[in-house]
Length: 523
Image (cartoon, rainbow, N blue to C red; front, top):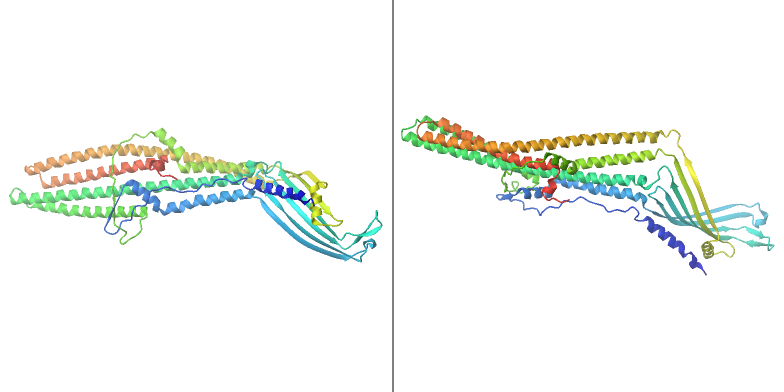
């Protein structure tokens, strides 16, 4: 038999299936950061020496905020896949059986009771298209049993037509022409999901930048407390050396015993300052351990010591360039612009929903039947011949009266766009103000470093002169102690200005949005 004729049916359906699959597939991005291997955690009694860059990479490796925020881009990527899945094709299959038995009033039927059995089975493919339309490719089959007999005029005999087979292959297409028409409109939710993924990546980047800046601040705070402790200890040694000098002068009979009491009183005060400075250093060390999320081992591991000193390399910030960098690199500004894009996409979609619903509906099909000497293969042969066919085409128009729901959504989307535009402008002003303040802070700290350094040098010279005068017997212990305290204050101020200067550099990098690039952190 010529049943091979209907093999093209399977080829048509397979072609439609492969045309639908992958029509909206895209490459997904996920959020990862590249860091160097984690440095060993200090054990009790050991000292962990960390450079600033090592602290940053170790903090990025261990920070839980980054781990938590890193899940969001991956979650948003699944939203993109779900939005694209709307256009995935569906393969369907249907099967049904029915039987009807009724009294028969037709004397020509040859039976007193009419019985009809139907077995139906169908399968096919359906898919929503990015244009807003949809199609359905169906292959229907039917086996019909009827116990009636029919009188054939050409041959005056009763013919037994109890069983018949029929097959139909049809393609139905529906395409909106106004409302919901077009690829851009029907990909709105996909584009919004992709934008949400970009926003989550920007927020992930912002979190990393915040953590890096926080690590730098805590690192320089620890540097300050260590150097300040050194200042207090040097000051204590100077007071102790002065007390020894005074004891020698008292023994030599050139000074009164009260000078020893004055020096020892100052020693006690400076010992208290050393104790306070030691506590501040331990507190700063613990804050760095918290930021680096070092695991607790014994008494929270050993000591953490910064390897990088506070350096002073004066720079002259370019204010217009820094503002331009911030508006180009700041992740929250990029996220706000993408958020505005989402509002505009929603506005265009709701505007389209105001249009009347006009759709084209059409279909085409071929069918086959086998009734005389019935067999399913004959029905398929008849279908494959193409002699029996059908087609239809038409337009369907629907206009909602008032359309108040769509109009309300349109106004809501319009207001959302305006609100997002104002918020973006407000953020732009805030970023500009932050950059201007960061530049002023660097300029001020640059001058403070020079001023405190000059003050420290003068205080050292004043103390040296006053000590010579004391040895010559023309000054007092009280004056020398006062100059020693002044020197300690200026030394501490110089250390503070140096660390503040380095923190202000980190702050400028943050407000410019170049933290990741400066520290070679890749996402």
